[in-house]
Amino acid sequence: MKIYKFGGASVRSAQGIKNLEYILRQETGSLFVVISAMGKTTNAMEMVLDYFVNRQTEQLQNKWQEVKDYHLSVATDLTDDKEWANDVLSPVFQQVEHIFSDVVPMDYDQTYDSLVSYGEILSTTLIASYLKRVGLDACWLDMRRLLRTDSNFREATVHLETSQHTLMEAIQENKANIYIGQGFIAGNKHGQPTTLGREGSDYTAAVVGNLLNAESVTIWKDVPGILNADPRLFADTVLIPELTYYDAVELAYSGAQIIHPKTIKPLENKSIPLYVKPFENPQAAGSVIKANVSSAIDVPVLIVRKNQVLITIRPLDFSFVLENSLSKLFALLDKHRLKVSLIQSSAVTISVCVDNVKRLSAALDELGNEFKVSYNEGLELLTVRGVTNDVENKVTADRDVLIKQRTRRTAKYLMKSI
Image 1 (cartoon, rainbow, N blue to C red):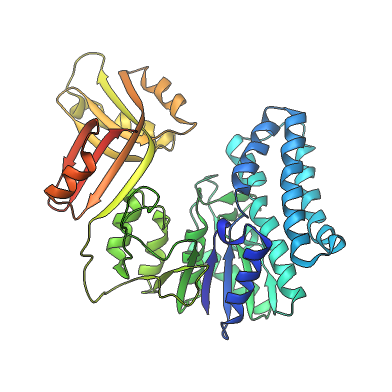
Image 2: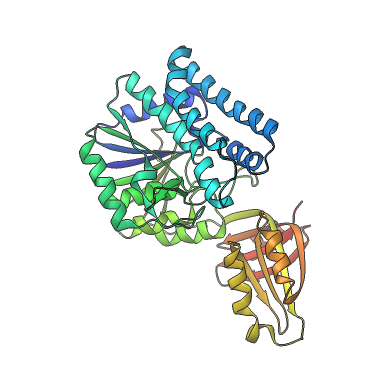
């Protein structure tokens, strides 16, 4: 069994889905294919959710109609058969509209998982039906029933032992060459949908690979493989042909967008290689993450996290902050699910860098009950692995650097965005 994962950019159009079909036809063995929501559907469904919980009926109907029209358009482009497109997608549309009939939404995070998860249900329903229509032995599986998680909505943790049983049982009952499952979504023991965190489809693929003892996991991207920097931000980027699991974890934790941070552990536990290959050039070698490599990374790796906020707290009574306040700060950050990417302290202050997300405002309000709080928005955090003085001078030239941290191999620069 091999695991293939296709992201939203790979399946955003009829041509993309046909390219997926071409890639699947090149593999003669068994495949488990994990697919994300098409294009920017998750963003659109998040807007649908906000209109729903705020009871903005007209905006809700307009945005939901956009989502429906987009999927119907792609389905029609695939086959020139509007009736087939409608027959395939209408049952899913009706399930979503049934949620809209609820008078009072449940908890926001639980409602998020129930509603936004339909982006993946729509994409996989369409693609599985299309693959069967063109003669491939494909079987659609509902990961909300097969990956069992806790009830930590929007950041659920997969229970591996229980999930292995349900997943293997489904595969034995539904004999096929190609299994189509959703990334990002799962379900708890009560049958309620859960999600694994934004961009969690990579993690889904890794978990499935672990549970099925897969030969390999391949993530198909719209890039040549793993590059040493984002080509949209830096010139002269180069491909990194192979990385260790350790390298990959370090890069993911620093904010590299190519791999979801939780992806590596399930694969490392069973020494399953992870390939990152270009969707538009399937024959290219791409990059591989594995236990041992022939040579270490020999170029600086630059990773940018945008839309950052620097929060600085100081005790109201002027006590030593590290002695009395550290546990309170991090308990509160954990409560509001704010991920810290940089920490700096003095005798009476602690500064942390976090993503600017919706939950930030509530966290700042709560911090203000016990601390004097100040913060800076509109920042970006640049992490450089393999830093040299020349690289540092180049990347920080003419930049307003608020914080610089440097160790033997790695440097972090928190700067005002340009």
